[in-house]
Length: 100
Image (cartoon, rainbow, N blue to C red; front, side):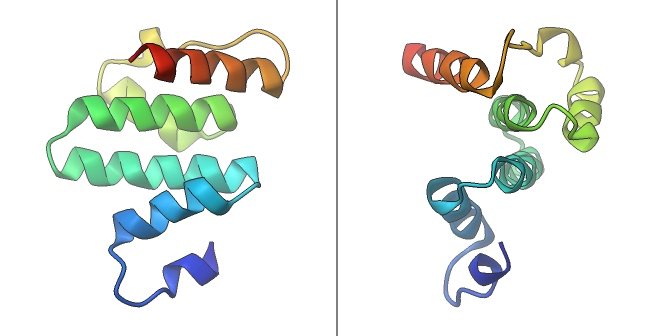
């Protein structure tokens, strides 16, 4: 993620979106979603923040900061844990995104 942070002229949100598009490491993608959730919350976009936090947890279930933020937003009970392996989790996430 360091090379993305160093891009000149790009906003923080643009750099994080690029991480989501280019990065294959699921943990780094989860951290990018966490940071996007923080940015969304700072802009008053609670729904967008919750969406990013859920996606972060789908990619990295051990990301306690995302889980804590969801709890603080009162959304912890809605976190969907996909059964099975990571492929199942990604499929579940994609199906939810397509329905939106």
